[in-house]
Length: 340
Ligand code: CP
Image 1 (spheres, rainbow, N blue to C red):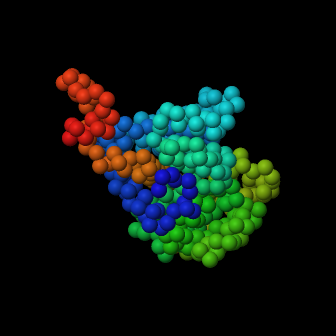
Image 2: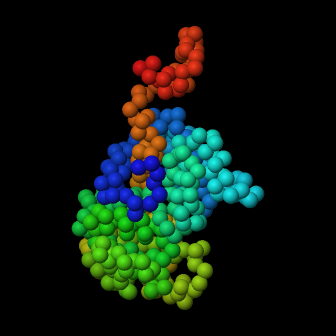
Image 3: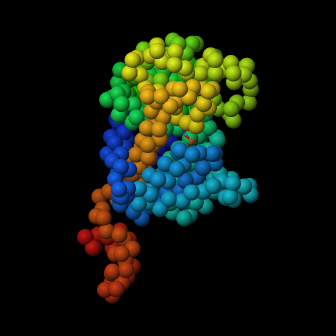
């Protein structure tokens, strides 16, 4: 796997490997010194063309906890604001030899286009309404942590399915790992393509009550007002009444059902505060697991070769070899090999 563009292209084995690797990284964030040298000398660029709190921050934290150099590019202060195209921006970033570029963009397929002009590993951090693979992976890690597995679970996904890259990535991932997925939302917000996924265990429900009945996991999605060009439902108030998740819905779910939301959430619209802040909510656990998942993704795409290498600092090696009248013209890699 050179890039992570979506869940759809991954096998169940690849997804499980990513989740297992993330699990092995989870403890690093609980240590006093939250850093390992796995990506020392590597460069990760965060290129975000859309707003983000969780994804951008957790990719930066993940890169830093793996000792990579993390560079954040804010599009409002980059040359994109002067009219530079996405591909020209990517070519110029590639000219500085990053190992990984993490991109969020409003257009579906933007990460794929970067793979055509960049040698760096490309990670999709959300492209339009298409996919958000690391969100689905962190959701799966959270479910696995609390349910000891995914196969055989019943998962309800409620809300604005049409505009949701999170829903698409989750439906692919959960069905590949053997869960049954029910989606529910206003008819105008459930795309026809989901009916094609019925053979893979996806059910499309008209009523939220039917989707959450006996569910082990209830995943609520945000109403994406910024992507809605038409009136998909009469008013926010009506949406909150008919498709907002309330305590009475949870009474229909399994007694130990958990509630998830990818964030950012519209409190009182798609989910009541009582549920969002209640004992079944794993919303902040999802954010915590986001760091471990993004560490795993960066490590597997940008650092497997480094994982084999000893924990010597390349700059120290160079300085030491120069102080000793050392060898000129060695590559960084050769210098490390010589020391150890
Ligand atoms: N879930 C998610 O992608 O959140 P951000 O938009 O804050 O990154």
